[in-house]
Image (cartoon, rainbow, N blue to C red; front, side):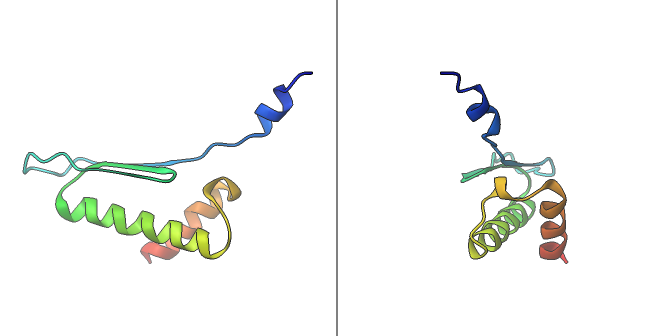
Length: 83
């Protein structure tokens, strides 16, 4: 039995956030379900954390996960969150 169709139908999604404005020598990394955030000043990294938490909260409240939405829907969600 060939499972290639099953494997090709499986979608994987994740968000990566990178920032390069840190000048204090600290290495900030935050990992979670479907995301990785790296770098940035304390303020920038905090903004990335706040944003991804809000994305996950909105998806959870709708009973969705990242693989359930299109890139366009994610972009709209991010625009709405960041106002």
